[in-house]
Length: 207
Image (tube, rainbow, N blue to C red; front, top):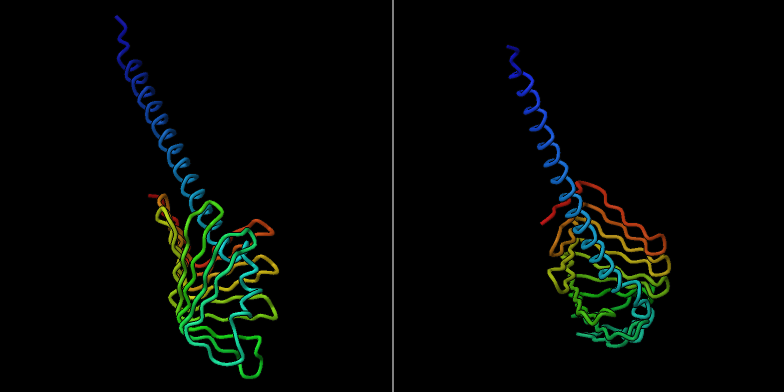
């Protein structure tokens, strides 16, 4: 009698290999889906962040109305951005540079915005800098931007170039949402080119 046990063992082993392969494939697909969801959420958050500085470029252009030729204490500027959404920017103090009055320093900056979807956004920083001539806005030290659904972005420095639709964050950059989190030393977002780049100890976590 010919025994076929080795053949059965090989078939069983092959079956187990196929099962493991299928499970690994499903697990990989699940991770890919979760990664895509997380990336979509993070880049959605970046879009929200960009609304503050790109869509409301009239904010920078009109802030000279808030700034006088002397030190202002607790100035507040309220208005509508380019899409007609309300915003408010305030500071503890605001004063122009003695040599170039188009350069304005802000201390203890706070701002609130509303997205086109009606979602509130706030940002705060220890220092701010306006270049009215160059249409640029900069925040420094302990920058925090917060919105709904767990959105929070933080960095040590934030610089906008409205004319080129460019937003640069540096120094312990982190962007978090309900589905994911990304951190780096530098993040550059370019709306015109529709690109986002991260450099320096980049970490991506999926919830």
